[in-house]
Image (cartoon, rainbow, N blue to C red; front, side, top):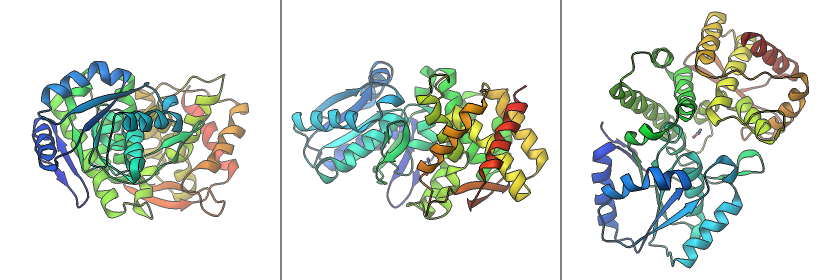
Length: 358
Ligand code: GLY
């Protein structure tokens, strides 16, 4: 697969990616390499990665605990302290080997340590390959509210090695697939339709589909790196999806959802809102709902869930002047930003979702 090059970073794939990484490290004369892993990627991915890394530069491994609940400023404190104790200086580099928590948190730690050291993302989950690791969004959660603290700052390289997906559980693969489906819904109907019929999928096809998703995401973030306009399209499904994800994380009566599982629900709800407010095709709404249900397990929402979920919308990062700004769809491939939605219509959307699960 060809590399994707922008003015600020490059995305390299598979074996060529390791060649490029080794060359980059050789060229930069780093004082020390730090590799950030979590307990899962330490066991399953680090041995593969180390077998490909060819360098004489001294390196250290820093491990954090695995899971969204550890995407916190306290975990950052642990990593900042480890870097400091292990004598990291401004010529050190941090390699983030992991899923979205490791790449987001590691990117933030690197962007702030000594006011910024270089970092590279090596995403090991599908979600991190097609979304989190590309475009320079870094940060941590604040309580259960997602990604409230962070900066936009890209590492020089993203290295996508799709063989890491071999060890990934099905539910994690589906979580990443949700972001790929989103890329189809905001940009490319044919791509969306291919993704909803994966019955004849081979590993080669998966590589091509991942590549296509990275191209869609990369084109958007290159046009609007600081999310002033088109980058907001990437938030389709996320206004309600993030609120649902946070609610399920803190609620005792709900099972915790993976990011993509929550975003899939958010996309159904926001397609419903699109059909009500923007004449989005009802036929497409029905087809998308059916496709999402064929992949993701349904969640039953009850009356008591709605007020807290709506309350959580106030933390959405697209909000301005107290307004909650949704990204909705005029059609598949035609997103519209800054749409205002009444709470009554949100309740109607949940009612549509609940009925669609039976
Ligand atoms: N994950 C959405 C973005 O990078 O803008």
